[in-house]
Length: 77
Image (cartoon, rainbow, N blue to C red):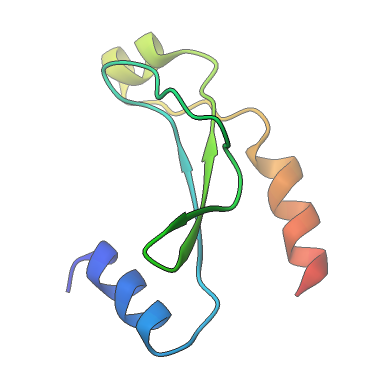
């Protein structure tokens, strides 16, 4: 089962599901809201990469604020 299908199924079953990801793609994502974006019942948190060119060239994500946000969210659980 693909990851996205697993996430959707968990949300359908009534579980509180959050996904932490980056905004890495060929063009920067234009988002009004980056955290707690509802995507079909799943809370998605998009983190800005320091450099999308590093991601494209070396496949290295650089979401500098991700560790701080994860620490805050884990404390809520």
